[in-house]
Length: 281
Image (cartoon, rainbow, N blue to C red; front, side, top):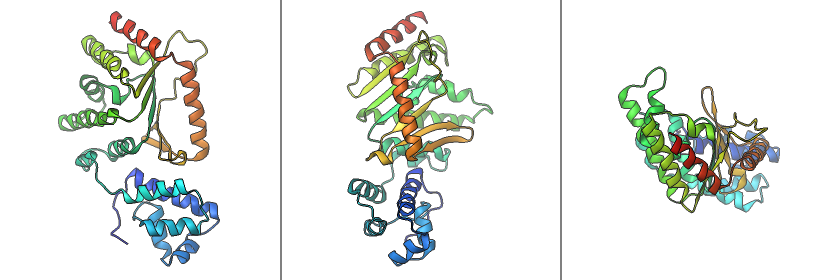
């Protein structure tokens, strides 16, 4: 076993969680899993908590011992375990809160991204001026250096829009709230329109005129995994982002996304509405 990680990433923790789920489904204790692998129960605990990595050989042995026959899932877990490359976000480790890095890593590995926002333009669509205004409003006020780092990090996250399928569901309220000044707000809407023209990007607006809409508390991002079992939904929580990945919760939130999509305008009508809002500014 390699040295223990001091601070496993959300992706490393997720791998351990999935291995624990397979063990639980097999009805085995950590001690029984350790015995079948020829290691200590402490090592199994470290793998399942993300504190230690696991080789492909050991992972496949664990899957076999857990009677898992889902080869697509096993291969996806092997890929998660094998990918130890450090992404661009690692330059921010130690200078920005860990959730910023975890979100960038999640987006990097996602096969698709869907986002629903009601009061803010989604981060991946924000201009630098809009992001600056968002972070500058924070209480207590951020030190200038950290403010600049947060803005730069959010701008770098946009690299994912170069090819990953992305869908944004934005309430009209987010289009009309002037987070910055009037000129910055117009520039922000122009940016949303520009990005929406990309073939792999879909922007849909939920209009104020819609009757019977009570889903405005449902801001979230859905990141598609290599297989559906590895999907993740990120939602804001009082103490930071909450990563949701249980089968039951994912099923509920997929249904919620479908309801939000059904409530939104089609892409063409959405662009028309965004243009109308921009002209009113």
